[in-house]
Length: 150
Image (cartoon, rainbow, N blue to C red; front, top):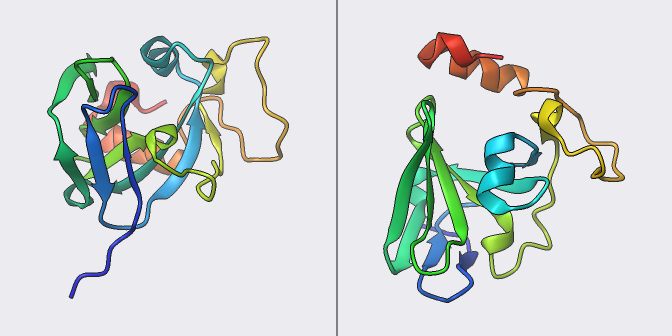
């Protein structure tokens, strides 16, 4: 028997519903410009699960290639950003934590791409802060996209 998470989530209008079949990891804030423009917010909190453990239960996600390293998945009805899949980690999916029905026990553990942060927004925490990607992520990016490792 496969044990799985009881975590589920969806979009604003209810057209999209998903379930996570394993516990998320690597929850963190992203301050990059693409996340800002995609969400309309100064930062987005995401977490990761194996792609096979992200089960779409209702609806159909719209996908858009947002850069030369990945694509974003969102609700085509209401526009809620749901997830991102990056080329350097094709077996993983980064989903937006706030789309979970209950995200209280999945707090972010780091900040990335702070070089793009909005000057009037900051969080009061002592989490590790990276001006660009975390070193371990930069190494993975470098192996797939040498021009985007920073």
